[in-house]
Structure formats: structure tokens, C-alpha cells
Image 1: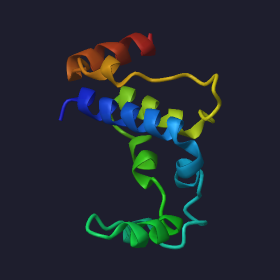
Image 2 (image 1 turned 90 degrees about the vertical axis):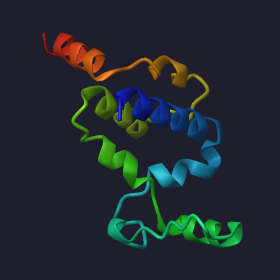
Image 3 (image 1 turned 45 degrees about the vertical axis):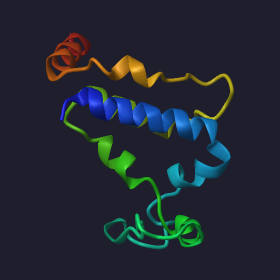
Length: 117
């Protein structure tokens, strides 16, 4: 998978969470200790009805974002770390998912080299 796909998905998630922060804030700022279930046993079920899914929300977190913070592509790890900062204020930086569509491995590598200089 090209990094642009992952970056686009993460920026779209960032944008949606920013818009609907009152409903999603707990998913991001819950420590693994606060979650009722270990991450290996995440209770997410795609087939669950809405009322069941809403009950399970209190037992989960967006653990995938935490995992992406250690991604081998620097651009992916950097974007994932934006979820650690408070981005719910109206003045917070807005991400446009379209900015990430043309991101390739080559472009990511070149950017990482420039950053390292």
C-alpha cells in the first residue's frame, strides 16, 4: 500500500474526529489501562447493531493510531502523532485529505532525507 492511502485515511479520520470531537474524544485520550479490555481483545464487531456498538465504545480506543505512531514511513508516524495533541479547538490546524493522495514511497523517502539533513 502506498503511504498516500494511509495518510489520506488518517487525515480523513483526523478531520472527522475534529468535527465530531464531543463523541470521539474518549477514543483518543483513553489510556490502555483505562480501557476495560486489553488491546488484543478489542470488542469491535462490524456486524453489531448500533445499540450494542455504542455500549462497546466505552471498552475500546483507537489503538490503531497508537500503532501507526511507530510506522516505518516517517510521514505516517508524524501524522499519527498529531492525534496526541489537542486538535479540538476551532483554531487548531485543519487537515485536507486531498493533500496526501499523491504521496508515494519515493516522495516519502525524499522528504525523510530532507528532514534528516
